[in-house]
Length: 358
Image (cartoon, rainbow, N blue to C red; front, side, top):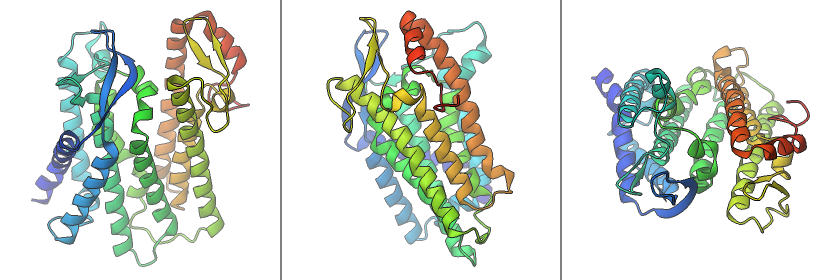
């Protein structure tokens, strides 16, 4: 029975989160992407922060009533992962087959996806909003379950482990608090819905992002100096400032270009049709937000204090591989879109990700 319930746990979680997303009142907002069919800017239903809070409340109720142990997601983590992998594969296949081919190879279509704008029943359910919402909520529930397991089973509690749990919690909450801002990011603008995005949000995102916790939840305090743990927190929030600050500055520039952002008045390059931001966070590098996300991942892994367990570093290594390749793809897209303006922009903002280095 443990195997069966473990396998279907992700399915139940996804179903409940989807129902909450549909029934909880939502803000209807305009994004950045233009609908190819209508030529109008797409609108989205945004209620992620409320869905997250209600999901945590349900998790608490199930735990306190002993219907589902608080530590269930940790205890059944391997079966839950297998179930999520199966669901992610099926979803990716279905969503790709639903739309006409865009590449000569089915495998390429399957990996990258076919549709950029997978919305159902009008604005009721947007695939990208839903996928990121489901991934963030299940990630948060996994983190809470891992934290409870550590507190209740380990004799000498590791403050760094709990800090890592706290940082991942911040990561989930702030993403959904600023959910609208992400409508202006690469994922919503350029990504198509296929294996990479569908499987990524349903299986990879909620399970792999906790990889540092998987291998340290049952381990005691490693005795790392307090200052080292504190520095992990400083590194994490430094990375968060870069990521959130850059995304917010771009969002402000796109929606209210005449206004300053924390005292930073926008400077830009324009060819009359397109305009590119070249100061503030975006004057440091062309993808300063990627650097911030990598720093956050490094901080989460390092906070556990078990530097010699190589598996904990998989999360930041994945981010490095993801963002370097994504930056290269984005460079090609922007060259094609902006033409000569992109050359002027890259001459002004010389570094790709790390200011002064790369």
